[in-house]
Length: 392
Image (cartoon, rainbow, N blue to C red):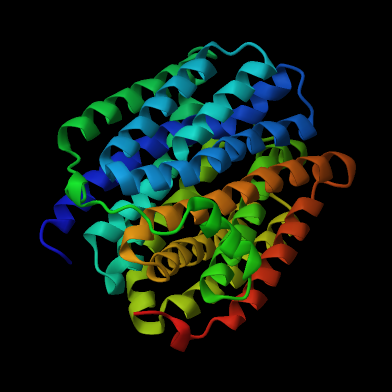
């Protein structure tokens, strides 16, 4: 790795970890709060999708802005928006306020493309998937801890989870402001040669090109995964009587496995088998996990089935991001990753909307089956990629 890259990544990993604690702290509680305010399953799907809409409209902009001004100010700006969103959640007493919260969260998370570009600046191509795995391992650790804190604090007062999440986020802003260096001198950050609209249109116009195939595979996997997340709390409540006081422990187990996979195992797999093979295997495992989950007859059986899901996502998502960063010029990394996150945002928008409606009007298990079919189709599309097509 380049000199000082480990130090830079250490600070970014801490920032990602604390940011995800706040995000995951309120996410499992959202369906319970929404139903308390009179929302049905379809409305819960809309609330989940609102996050994706905010991310969709902001991710390409944040990515291109980070190419122009540097990664650091964009990352800090996103954290500030997240703090505002958590404050809205704390005072929410109606569904429309939860909607505002989710939109602000999504706009703040659009800076993910800047964080990924930061990794690309600091780490060479051959080590990029492993470095991205470290970052996502930290977010998985936050996903593991956040829901447990949320389930604990919700017993204090309904506003407590939002206030605690906001406090975490404000501490994170202060930490990043003090310790996060710029990934490269601002004056040396070059502007992307291709207009943003052209980069988006290229993915639509040339869907069989390697970079486009990777982005479409990522988008399909994300749609299925986020659709499952949108209805999982409702499914567990309907099937097993799980409440907001106990759901956090599901995330502890699943998040713990994801930390191990992304932080300790992913790098070895990529070095041995390459990003393309790891991507394909991850998509297949995600599909298998989503097939098995609704077959479970008990909460413990559901949890065992769900163990396969973070294994699949840990292999799929970092590999796709690494490949996208390889298929572009250095000065277009932020923009390309922003385009990827933009398409991912469309998936985060469509997945929860479809899953919520299907859950309410078709059947509680059907969103899992549909998601599994979509991810399996993505795995078939990824067969167009071969290890020989990997750039670099």
